[in-house]
Image (cartoon, rainbow, N blue to C red; front, top):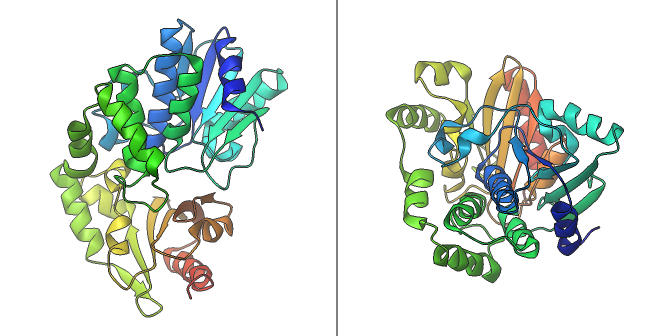
Length: 321
């Protein structure tokens, strides 16, 4: 595996760079991508950020989010993926990644997921609370400054993936970086409000409807919420508004594992998993080709909803003490 110093030198020697992240991106995906883009802007290196998905509504407030494209529109001699554990997680952009490899274009993978498959030519994978922690160090090695814009992109990833500094992988390094970003001008109050408190009434309606139907299994140690397309349509909500939903059932005192089962299309469900103390949800998700972290992971399941819940509850039962 490459060191971050080596990755930094490879990036600085590139003439043009394409940055990609995983489908259905979260704050850490966008924060990592846009912070690296800002560092490349400092060196006047042409670059572009691409993700296959629409911008989620909960992150529409982010300055610079409009520069993100769905497909590349420029030539590049280096492709970098950030916060992405495997090639398939790029979604439709996995074809672009495969084409780059066929053309012998160098590829770099910078990530923090335990399930990362080291799929690029050059890989740097270190488990930590947020990939923006890896990205902050990389940017420092590149020699780019932490201006206010870059600091706020990094803060975005730090806050979202650490659960607002609540997850058990939060370390002294996490807080040290947060202090450094605050010193650089990042507005923690503004980002805290927009990420965790502000919500449209459509989200409030969907939240109330979803939580009223929590299902409990195995002496209330496993809790599941189901978000259907019909419910989202009737509440005039979108997928971005469901960010953080899975954390609510996890707060029930008896619950060790919580799952959000969100309907993507008929017969396809996006599963988000969280655990509290001991269950390894990365292994649970891995059963179905997904992954992530020990306490937070995801996967896709297919079938009708009751079949999906039966599969998922059986698998989770294997990891409950």
